Length: 614
Image (cartoon, rainbow, N blue to C red; front, side, top):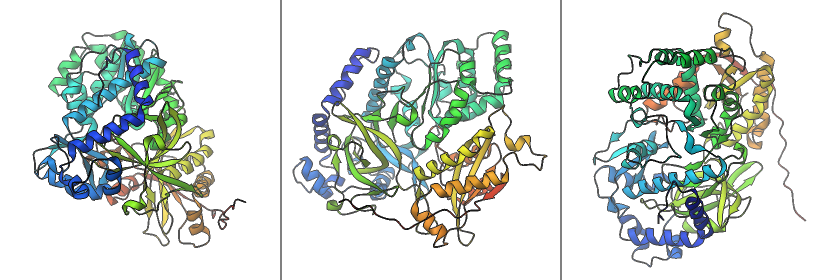
């Protein structure tokens, strides 16, 4: 299913994308036929097909739409040493751990050698799309901050690792052919360093030394890139001293990193060190990326979904550079490409490539601001209750939940992503990522999802931004210790002027930087923006208490990340959870609270009045 093309030939790549999207229906039919033919004799498919024909309708009528809990026993059997034939005719070569969890542990997705080839094909197609919109990328390098996470071995001997760690450690990445359009400032040895602090330091050092060659910067997620900026704030003086002396800090002990960086930091450079000192010691770091790397054309990070909350902070540091989200992918499968990479973050849509998997879509309705499945809400339903729509049959403006059948052994699997159709490129639909399914806060009958919380906080933070205060991180939890329970939202704040954090600047002072009444207004604003059920519970049922904002010290969310990573999350894939339930995670943030504020108003609510059409 992978047509060959030269990734350095832009015209060839763009023509291939035109062919794929023009023939989306035929390619989808070929994909499902190949998957079924290859895997017809697997235990999983045999359970449902029972020797019946391999046509698409039989597949849809017989094989159920499933969640991870349904396939978890099969995955665990393979992890414990049973043959891949349970779900896949091809050997499962590793298990990919996702950022989602099941029973407190990362979910595991099957992967094969062919799957790595699919990812390489996908990455290669990003190059011609970017070159179509941005000239001259072959004349310099990309400072991409990429990281790995140590893997674990399952009883079968198969390694379980995050999807990006899998790819960076693969021969496909390590032995990739030279591509003049895709040269990194970071040597592979620094990317593959298992010590994330040493890896970050060395990658930033290489990026600084090669600043005149850097044409683009980025990381996988916006949050990771901002962590790099924070790291630079903490270590710029030591980095500049390394450049001034032409020597790497002694605490960098990874031998491969030292050798690789030494091949780039070949001699002292006092002029560059002076320049870095001058830029980094300025009171304000606004526009720092463009100042340090003046030839940079864009910042490549994912800023869709929950990453959208980082956009203002990225814009503060970026100096007006475009924020580019190139791709939509997960541990289950790589899905789609942004065909208009210079679009505004709020306008980003991804075109699903029809040869990557077989795609189906569960229709989702939006009623009174809430998204719900047209066929009902239960996670696993009878076949006739979960009617899916094929890729080419989705409707413009409609919401859907993504369902995939992959080459690696997932069949009609609910990814958990809610998407909205924004348009079509030829015959292939384009989707805006809305949010992950079932990421909620709940005290009573209320259910607040990630998107609702983001929208409410986005409105509330507008109240403090005129004071030059940025909301840099947030998360939440449902506090049921009090009666009634209430929503708690943790905020980390930063002054726009300079690098001083609010609590650091005022440690010794009684006076609040943000006036109490204004923070209470922020609490009320969040509540007013939440849905009708929440507001009813607050104002009529009195089953939910006043929402609380707890402001935390600078670094509190770094401590939260360290904890999550220690529990099995990937450094490279880590995204701040927008709702936390772990008692330990809550304690980590609670121990760093510097101020607490409650809503003083009851949010407005009135009974829902349905609009009847005549």
